[in-house]
Length: 315
Image (cartoon, rainbow, N blue to C red; front, side):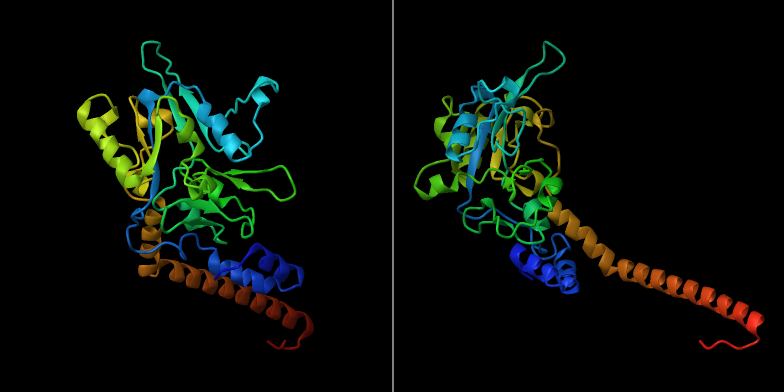
């Protein structure tokens, strides 16, 4: 069932709350309407980024370019208004460079670029009850539609990479995340961040091209990159932003998640529960228990009344 924010609000405002509730109940099973039994694969023309920590010098030119291209107000909260220095991804920041600095002084440090990973099977898309977040079938870009968003922030909570941010300020808040500078792509340009990177630490291309490039670097420099592998190749079911790192991935905010996507795991457990009728059985037993409890209480009340009045109460 496809329902927009406007339609839901209209139903609630006209008193048909029950109808809206039914609608919400129908679509509020995260993943049910989106996920399928098939293992999701990236579209053939999926766009991608490849970020190599060994090439990043932490200049943050990509951060400034992103803010300018997306017309975001520079976050100067940490600098007292002097210069752009966002502490993390937030309502003003879709792309950020962070520094991993280990406690041991003789260990390697690393910069890391963080933005939406554009997962092959995104949790935010699977969990969005109103289809406000969708994945483009051609490019694989995960984008947000403000006309359908109810502001539940389930996308923000469910994302395993903690990327979507809710714009708390303003009367009509947005969900802020990287959308691959779609306007620039439509004009034949590449995303702003990849366009300005002076060391080509982050590059743009199709996922197929960049995955081949990443594997080529690993093969040419064995031992240079952590585990000699590309993060995002199959991690979390695959992502369209790929990483090469000289420090452990989890140190720079890339969790070990296995090769299965979160929606796929969720649907697997849901199918198991329903296939053995666990959920319907639990609901039935609970309902019967409640009814029997109420009947006993009612019967005890009748007997007390009969003792007091001598009259047999009607059921």
